[in-house]
Length: 123
Image 1 (cartoon, one colour):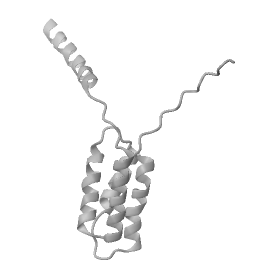
Image 2 (cartoon, helix red, strand yellow):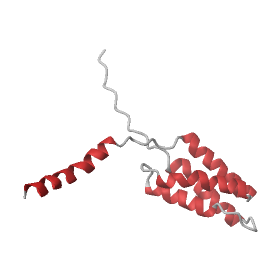
Image 3 (cartoon, one colour):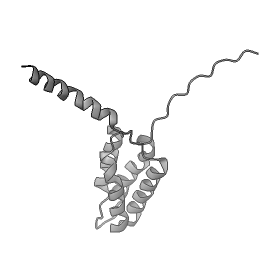
Image 4 (cartoon, one colour):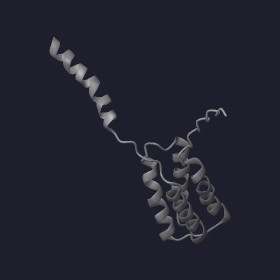
């Protein structure tokens, strides 16, 4: 009777120990987001397989990033879906790529930490 209880105790402790060992994954840098943004703009203008493929390849790993918000991932998903080569490069197509590309640096950047108020100094 005791052995199953001990095993149950280990089963409950193991997930918390594994979580403690995970390293904190950094947010994508502004430069990385900016390079994705520029590739998306290039795909929008050129409508060629090279720039659109690079845009999708660079954006795809961000969908699995553990620290990015759902709003950011929705934006990236929209960008991936729109970055396709089509026969006619219409304004609607370009706008469907440019819109999420413009929001990348706003929605996906690391949130700024609130600054601690400085203590008043006595003179």
